[in-house]
Length: 51
Image (spheres, rainbow, N blue to C red):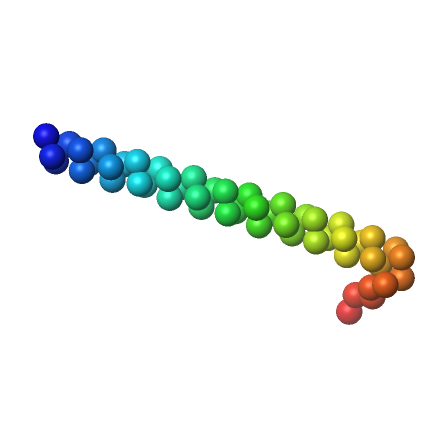
C-alpha cells in the first residue's frame, strides 16, 4: 500500500512540476510581448530609441 501511495505522490509531483514549467513559459512569453508593446509606445513618444 505504501508503495502505491509513493507512486501516486510521485505522479502528482511530476504533474505539478510540468504545470509550473508551462506556467513559467507562458508568463515569459506574456512579459516579452508586453515589453515589446511598451518599448514601441516609448519609441512612438520619443522617449526610447533602439540601438
